[in-house]
Length: 335
Image 1 (cartoon, rainbow, N blue to C red):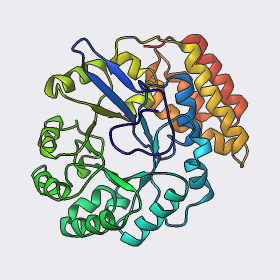
Image 2 (image 1 turned 120 degrees about the vertical axis):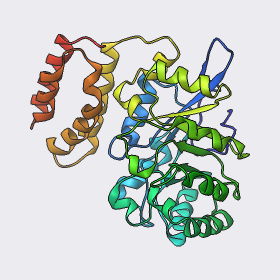
Image 3 (image 1 turned 30 degrees about the vertical axis):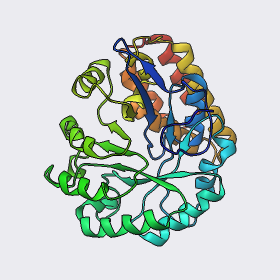
Image 4 (image 1 turned 60 degrees about the vertical axis):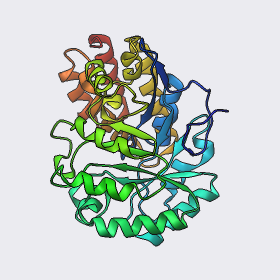
């Protein structure tokens, strides 16, 4: 089967999976961003079943050399069949990164992704995630060692700096030293978190690197997507995150063929919920926690759904959650 042009992880799919062809003849591949607590293997595989269109999925970050049972479940090849999946590692310690990469190699993976994009204050304070960008000399030394010793190819998901966009030039000078399998550029600073608009212009500076590039940041509508393609008409890959969680039909919408299918959305959510019920311990509480995380993003997809979403978020039992879902789907239209 055809794979991405960079060496990807386990899983196979049809040659045209994740591609959309536009009037200009341009092909763009879509990737699903990792989101802690949401894009688990249950979410990913259910999304692939109901919607598809994703060329490559990424796991939420792995941050310990001793993988937990939850993390092992998330990367098991049998839980990710039919998908290209690349595990993501959050680390600033060489031995930790290499230990995790070695474990992933044993599962059959050929590529991992280094998280240099997480903006969380607690993560950044330890110089991990986007916080690692604050110490470029240490980052450079870390990259030199892992690229030399890693048993797997390495892609990077990065922000463009910590406090100032002027940092981006020095960061790029570091990246261009290494054979990065793919550079995913989230065009915000660490201090921007998600509160400020993405700095789309910063992506252009990365184009001088001779590596596959992927754009990430604020692609949540056809208008935003058209603006991106206007700025970068040779764009090949786009990573979708919060916009895709908030609107599972987003890829179809970007391609001009949204279905606005409530039955499909209801089946998607019910399937996810049923799978969590079957695979999680802790009774209703843990399953509800997972479903409510999704609804943090999903509520705005419906017209006049505020009171129904509140009931979903206040549910303490699965029966209450299901009743609130029934009421919302019966009363509200998709935007």
